[in-house]
Length: 45
Image 1 (cartoon, rainbow, N blue to C red):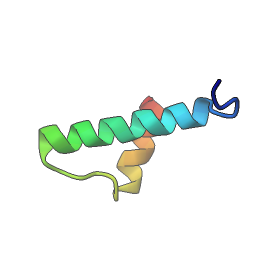
Image 2 (image 1 turned 90 degrees about the vertical axis):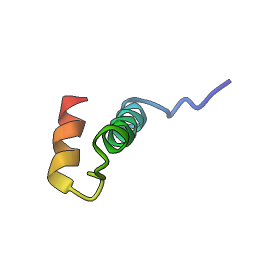
Image 3 (image 1 turned 120 degrees about the horizontal axis):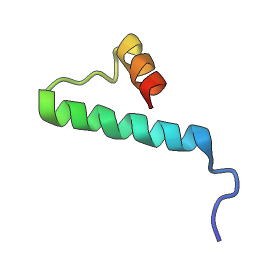
Image 4 (image 1 turned 30 degrees about the vertical axis):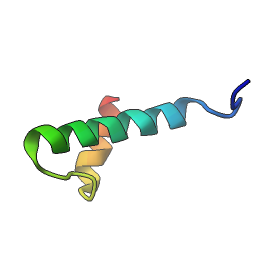
């Protein structure tokens, strides 16, 4: 019952997307087009 291929990278992507949305909500700025910011966020996750 579930996707056995769902793993680390999928989890990381969900976390990164969550924090991008949180940043957008709190700071009113969309960082999803900023490759450097997304890379730094991915490293932090």
